[in-house]
Every structure is written in C-alpha cells, then in structure tokens.
View 1: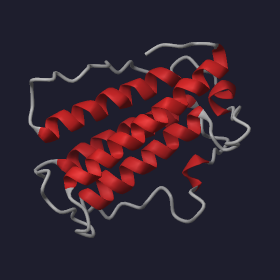
View 2: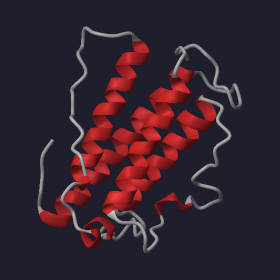
View 3: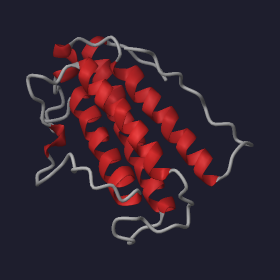
View 4: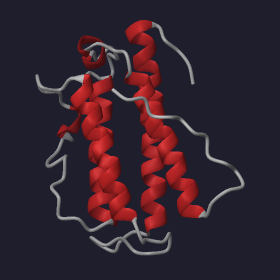
Amino acid sequence: MAEVERVWPDPLDGDEMTVQTRFLDFLRATALQKITGLTREQAAAAPLPSSPRTSALGVLKHLTAVERWWLVIEAGGSDEPSLWPGSPDPSWELTPEDDVAPVVAAYRAEWERAAAALAGLAPDDRTRRSGEFTVRWVLAHVVQETARHVGHLDALRELADGSVGE
C-alpha cells in the first residue's frame, strides 16, 4: 500500500474550498496511517463493547460510503449507487473479502470520484442532487465526520497494537 503524505494545510494559502479539501486530505491520510501495518485480524477486530460493529476496516468502509453519498452523489449529482442502502447503515459490516488492501484501495478510489464531483463547484453552490445543501455545508460535514472517525481509528489502533501518534 503506497503511503499517502500527510500535509498540514497552510494557514495563509488557499480559498475556502482549497482549505477545506486540504483538511479533508490531511484527515484521509491520517485515517490510512492508522490502518497501515495492521493485519486483517487486527483491522477487523471490534474491541469496543459499546460499539460491536466498530472496527478499523469498518470505519474505512463507512468513510468510503460517506464520501460516495455526500460528495459524489449529493454534491456532484452522480447516479452512482449509494454504499449504504438501507438501515441500519450496512457500510460498517465486513465481508470475508474485506482486507486492508482492498478496503484502502476503495477508499482512495472514492477520493478521485469526490474530486471529480466537486470540480467546478463553489462553496455557495447548491448541491446537484437535491439542492437542499450548499457545497460549503456538505464539505464541512464530510470534514467533521472524517475527523470524528479518525478519532475512533486512534483508539482502535492503540487497542490493536499499542501504537499511538498523530
């Protein structure tokens, strides 16, 4: 798995969309850093008694679904299928095929779809699917959702092998 460089956004460089997407890129890279080096068993473990579906692989699958829905479908107006059809949210569920490399590859592929979906959009634009949100709101929502789940990955990684870090 190729390493993704974590770059802290420059506080004096970029417009609103640039700053938000750079923070999202930083969080994405952090998420991958938290799972890199874990075995399938470690990455699939759900050690939190109050959250029995929460595993590192499940977090990445969920973040992939978040990006698909909010950035690709809602903001960009794509007709690609949602990755969480139904309730409760199935994006957390693991299949036997869910191993670190393919889950990471799917997450990274979604970044490219998201970038294409956001191309040409401005913060004040309405989303292309429903028009119920601004692009600003959707991007801020995805940043906060990713940040929250990177926190989960921090705890899951520490429980998996004792690793701590940024």
